[in-house]
Length: 302
Image 1: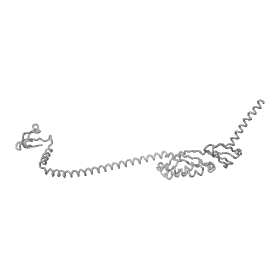
Image 2: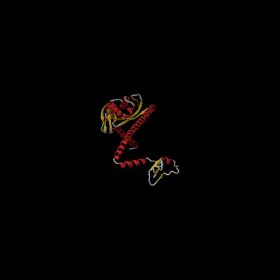
Image 3: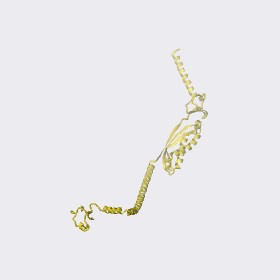
Image 4: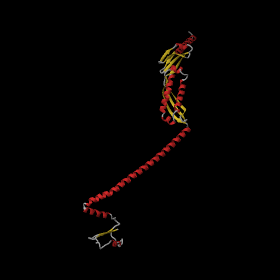
């Protein structure tokens, strides 16, 4: 065997392996988890394989027969910057998050031309209808409710496409810059109006409370003043049964009326020895605060 014959045999073996490998590749169908493989004959599905594994289909060598792999994994799409209007005509920019998966591969391929495009259009249409029936305040505060309404509408229609919508929610709602400025200016004005109203109501309540307090205080003071003479009368009535105590009380009461530093008291002088007129004639430098004698009556002058 010469070198030429050896080369022919070697390359022939390699070509045979390559040919066998190509044939096995063409007739084998590898199905991965969460995947469906459709065998199509001239565009019509003749077999559907869903269980993971390796399958041999020699018919794939026949012209017009081909395979189509359809993923059944969970997928998602973020629909950003969708422009819709609320009931008042205010333009909103909405971001949506959508999670879905294919549950019927054959229906998703043959039931509709492009279910992804149809799904996007259906979601946008449902969002426009739902937002167009609500005011801006409701859209901002009821995003979860609106998301459920859109999900229920889209999920029912997507079943006919072989697609299951798992989750749908509104991620963000924004206004156009010029509309946003007008909106915040309006909100600021409403806040200032509410603040002024609360302050005015607070001042009125404080004045009412102060007036009511003064009325109650005046009422209580009037009651106290009206009760004082009655209490004094009852005290004098009780003292009337004890003449000595009553006389001592009157004497102490007279003394309590004297103001220290402004009253000069003369003790020990008789009624004819010193009179009030004589006391006024005494100079201030010579007037003692108190001049005492052993006995006698006293006079006081202020």
